[in-house]
Length: 381
Ligand SMILES: *Cc1c(COP(=O)(O)O)cnc(C)c1O
Image (cartoon, rainbow, N blue to C red; front, side, top):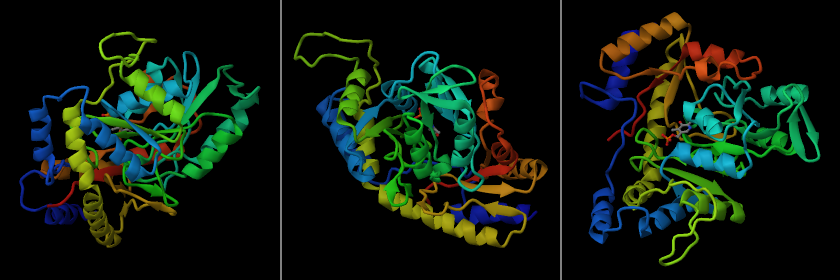
């Protein structure tokens, strides 16, 4: 393996710093101006104009009719699941190759994850595996999908666009339609990614984004729900803002809501970041192209390219090594040399908290878990 050469190549992209992080935020636009404006207004908390503006910017960028900001992506997922009807004792089909937030949000609704496999090329939910699961276990009864094997209701399907690479979301949408299952997209990693020309997160009844510090753009911490459903958008706003009935001085709440509001201060950061999003996406794309060319000349490493029919934001570039041994050697050497690289998350079905969940054969996910490494992907200055 061209180990030393590869580490040197990454260094050549990211300059002379002793430590090269996997991803780092860049604040090169109006961030300080908007933050100052926000502080001067004293509206730094749950009320303010930046929240509305940030929501409008994300809605416009993604093409969604409505966008509702939240305190983080996990909170957005929790509310999205609740709003499509995920409830206690039901089951939610997702992929084992994801960040733990996907499964935790399912658990917050007191539902159970069910795992189907991913595709090797997209790293996201495999429609073939989903279809095989549904054919074997699902039956639709009075407009409700039941898992014949467990007797529980299947209340949602949640695919995730891994590292920003869109999965085969059109086929997943079709299957959800056929089996009468609500469909929520975990698009936390895929702001700026499109499938067949349509922005990820807008195929599902609800889509969710994250603006955590390591994502393509950041608000420090933050999240967003997007939807075309007006009633659902109104409910999302209501229950993420403590379910308070609008009134100038009375405090009346008509259900148990959540304090999931995004502070205006964070939204100010978000507005400035959104203004630079296109530029950052182009910058990241150029980095991905440089990686692709480089790895074409390396026999035993495969660079993960954007899938067919998709345009990826290349949030985190990924490579596939030949074996677990090679991967471990690469992780050790590169991190040791100050070039941060990371293995894939421990698969959800292998975490103690989720190991008893029902699952399909997960051969692709297991194969990828042993071999995939993320390499530095931040915007280059
Ligand atoms: C980042 C992320 C989230 C949400 O994370 P927050 O840190 O809560 O904003 C959810 N799902 C996936 C797959 C993610 O990568």
